[in-house]
Image 1 (cartoon, rainbow, N blue to C red):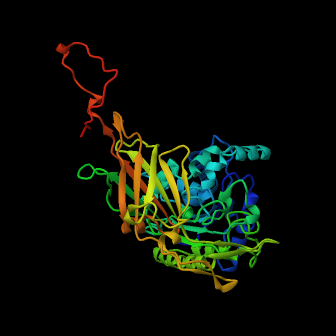
Image 2 (image 1 turned 90 degrees about the horizontal axis):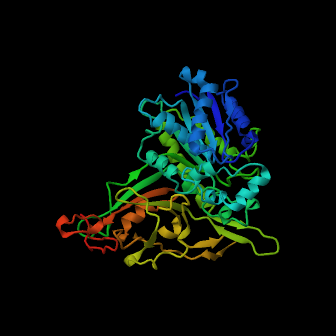
Image 3 (image 1 turned 60 degrees about the vertical axis):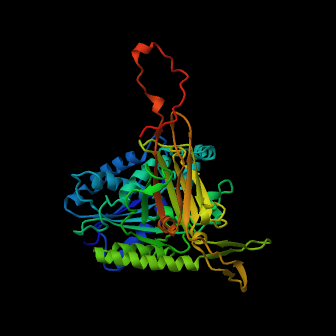
Length: 501
C-alpha cells in the first residue's frame, strides 16, 4: 500500500471555523516532505461540517460527507488512489459512520478509498458531557455565541446512545473487516488520546471537565476501539433468575491505541490537536510522530507491530503520569492520582426486544455482597436520557484490580495512598419493574465470579453488556369462555398466578 495521495482533516462537534486545525496540516506536510514523502500539490483537505444546528444528525453528516468526497476527490478515487483521514473528537465517530454506511454495511459496496483513519481523542463510545451539552446552561451559552447546541449530533454522542451502540456492536463483531484487510485494501484505524486535565479550561459548573480518566471531554476507554460485547439472557429452566451468557464474549479486532503524554482534549496550550505548531520541531512533536508512524504502515504485519509498540508506549506513559502535583498559590498543592479506568455500558431489554427503563442494577463482590467492593471503585454512572434502558458505569480499574502503595514524589518516605488489594470476582443483581402484574419481570443475577471481572473490567477499554430478561405473561391475559355460561365481565380480572411457558 503506497503512501496516501491526500490527507483529509475532520474536526469535532460545534466547530465554526477551520482554524480549529491549527498548525497540524502544515506541520504534517512539512514533515512528510522532509522525510522524502512529499504530498502532491493541493493534497490537504480541511473538512467543515454543520454540527451546531439541532436538526442535523450524524446520518445527515455521513451522507453529506460522501457527496463532498465524491465532488472533491472523485477523480483521485476513480484512479484507485486513496486518502488518509485525520479526525478530532466527534470527527472520529463521523468518519466511522460514513465508513459503515458506504463501504462496510452494503453488500455491493466498493472498497473503501480511505487507507488510514487516525483519530485524535475520538468519542467512539460517546462522552458523558454530551448529556449536559443539551441542557439549559449549554443552550444559553450557545445562544450568546449565535449557534445552537447541535442536539441532533449530541444525541449520538450521549453515552449509551442506540446509534453509537449499533455502530460499535458492528465493529466488535468484525463487520467492518480486519484492519488493513487480507488484500492490503482495508483501512488501518488508529486512536491517539490524552488523559490530561487542562485546569485553566475547567468548568466549575460541570465536574466532567475535570474527571480523572479523561482528557476533560472524552474518557480514555470511550476513545479506544479495543472493546468487547457480552450478551446475557435469563434462564428458562432450573434457576430462572440466573443470567447466562449467550455464546462466547465477542472481542473487537485488535486496534492501534496510544496515549499522548500531557495531552488534553482542546486548547492551544495542551490540546491534542490545537496545540500542534506548524513549524517542524515545534510543540506537538509527539502527536506528529505518532501520526507519521501510523501513515507509514503499509501491511497488516506492520500494523500488528504498531499495535504492540503503541501499547508499550501507553503503559509507560500511564505509569509516568500516574501522580500529578498541581502547585497552588498560598494553599497546599493539589495531588491527583491518574489510575487507569474502564467503561461498562449495560443495555437491558426483555425477551421480545423491548427496552426496559425501570430497573435497579447492583454490583457485588465477595459473597455476592455489594458492601465488599473497593472504596472509590465507581467514578460515575449515567443513564441515557433518550434510551433509559442503557446505563453507563465508569470504573477506577486500578482500585478494582488492586494497586500497590503510592509514595509522594516530593518525599518518598511519605505515602500518598496505601496498598489496595482490589477484588478477585464480580457479580451483579438486576431488579426490574414491574415485578407483579399481567406482564411482569423477575429479578436476574450473576453470582460474583472471577471470569466476569476479567471479561468486563479491562484497563482503558469499553465493554458492552446486553441483557435480556424474560417477559413473564400471566395465563389470564387471554382466555376462552363457554358461550353457554352467559355474559361475563372481566373488567376486574384477577391474576391466575400462572405464567405462560
